Image 1 (cartoon, one colour):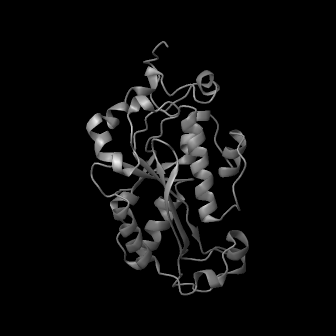
Image 2 (spheres, rainbow, N blue to C red):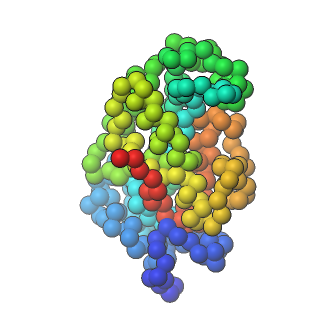
Image 3 (cartoon, rainbow, N blue to C red):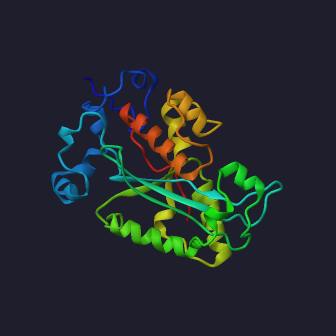
Length: 260
């Protein structure tokens, strides 16, 4: 295989992207840049966290820049006209193994809104979340504490483990979470301040912007949509499936967005 040094890792030219699935795993081109993250010492250290084996043993996916992707998709209170402030009412995270692109763990909870505790009919129709699903649930402050505990349990706070959040758009971590935290006087953890916007990653890989988000990305990759649109946990599963498909075709994900 001839090396293509002029192509940056992460960007797939059309002629490469349309090659059969699994055609990129052993190409030297895809080992540049990311392979240093999977050195033998690190492989041994991460062996107990689902990263057994060596880079050479991985043939279906190119090495990614991150050990884990944390797929996140909020659902929030809403109405027409819009209510303010919006409040998160569903908080799901999928822990996606960066080597296998398989889901290893799930964090999922509904969240009790405190400013507008009663869900609007519009919100229920859009998200499928009914009042009983948020009543007596933890508040955002409590949920953020539980997220921290879950991340610690999963080894995601270990400085030697590289992980990053993934969202469909920038709204979740650029606007929704920091906006609600500011309103409530809560701190935003540093790990929420940089992320991968899947729309940008998809556009970078395919060359077209997914105007209709997950629906366009699933259609563009010939994937069937999983579950119900605007269900946070189902949207996370769709994001994970799209990521796995792109990775299978050789795409290397990198950070697209940050908030200072």
